[in-house]
Length: 118
Image (cartoon, rainbow, N blue to C red):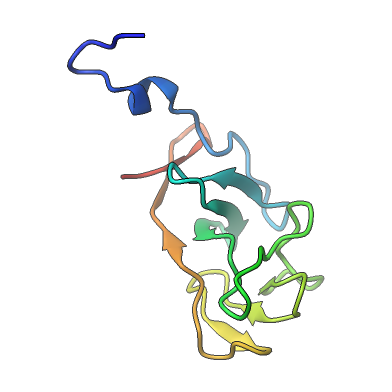
């Protein structure tokens, strides 16, 4: 398929990460353009995105989209129990204390759709 000069394949294939992220709900999991797994979550009214890789062992944080621990105050690695501040990605408990999740730049449109920004 050929695209006009003003429209790249990336632009033509772009879809929002999510059209509705619920406060305290499941994360929207997605794949970055380079194939790396990632997630977005709504917490305390904001939308935050990170690579879905625990700094402790590199595996995914989520289990079937669940990244918030039961109190809803922290993100938690389902494999190692490390807990992270949702707004900073800083590990505040567990085997990687002091490390950080890799943040992603996201934007949320007025209609609630969440997009990965370049």
